[in-house]
Length: 211
Image (cartoon, rainbow, N blue to C red; front, side):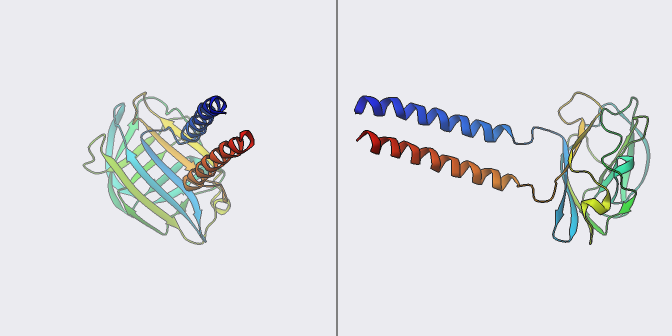
């Protein structure tokens, strides 16, 4: 019986390692700036964070940033209203989609934190709006809320969209539109916990059967 237990124990450990690896593998791998757009109660909330590498972009002019969304035009601005920003443009087309839905322009009702925005165009060229005085590579954090809206009313199609202007780790802007009812990372961790319990339960059952 001791010999059998020695064979079973590594099998359970190996299976547990596979489960952990699978859970880790489904975590977002994108670096750079990431915005999550999701339904929160009766509102839609955009939450952004991460650094931006301005390499490959050229300064255009200074202006004011306004929190807004325009899925049909691949435009999104997250942060406070009338925030002082600098506009940067790429010398080559962005690599990424020219829309993330069919909705038209909508202002956010409120916003906070730093401001960051992206504007695309049908020909693929785009621009970024970053806070005035922003130092390339520094982390940004912001949010914007659309009161009494749904993703459907905003015309935003669930999915992951990414725009890049280089090959660097932070030369990208990622938008993750979460479909209503999709589990978050907390649910994923819960699934891992249940899997661990199930594995140890199976191990115990095998020991009882061998006894």
